[in-house]
Amino acid sequence: MRVVIAGDANTVATTSAQIVSRQLIGQPTSVLGLATGSTPVILYRELVRRYEAGEVCFSRAKSFNLDEYVGINPEHHQSYRHFMQQHLFDHINMDPVATQVPQGLADPQIECTRYEAAIKSAGGIDLQVLGLGANGHIGFNEPTSSLASRTRIKTLTEDTMAANAHFFGAQEQQPSLALTMGIGTIMEARHILLLATGKHKAQAVKAMVEGPVSAMAPASVLQFHTTVTVVLDAEAASLLDAQQYYHWVEKMRAEITREKLESS
Ligand code: F6R
Image 1: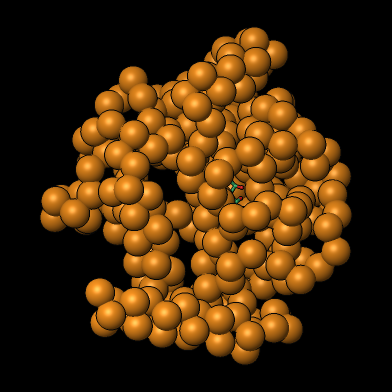
Image 2 (image 1 turned 180 degrees about the vertical axis):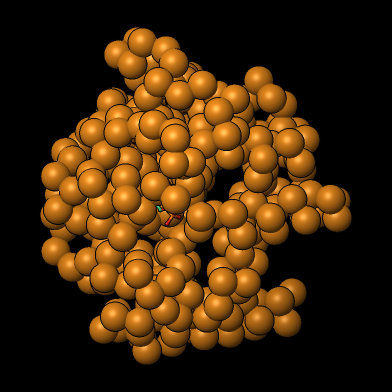
């Protein structure tokens, strides 16, 4: 697991946007896995900026979002489809047909099977972007989720509902069920890029990176993946024991890159 402690949220955005951009430049037909929530907003803003500056192109890419609330209309202001349109899809040149978000109004069972098959027929996910729940969830795979789970319907924990309650109006019914890619589905992505910012994520980051692998900390399963990049701000990284080592590794990587550039 590569752990990049980027300092502040802006550096988290530029570091992670650099990874997504490189993926798209190296492989324009990439299949991206995308997340919603507060954390990736800064990444999407930076990607839109790069697209507008002509630095990155999405025209041949495809995407699959991690999750969607059950029973929610895609036009609803809190649907994850709406979120993605607002923060990314409406501002870039990705073919709308190539952007997939689980359909919250579909029959859940049929939709989950369809979604898994669609990911497979697209050739699998090349780069999966993840946020991290304060309780350690990835996607909506709450603690105790099977580490081998596939796309399915999940009941949200009270903690997750409380964390997202402020997005919904007082008169609005907040969904308690979601369709989510499973942990097994996420683990099949070729490269995983997880972002976490803020003090409230520090405990979950510690459990994910340095804790024992456990269904009680679903993100800890990423320790079994060979190509994971975790990009953190200083607050989210604050409880990590090996912070100095992670900084040292990044310093060495930068030196190796500089030497390679100088000798070429
Ligand atoms: C969203 C998702 C969730 C969030 C997580 C963190 O698609 O899959 O796992 O990434 O709940 O949310 P924020 O970024 O709002 O703290």
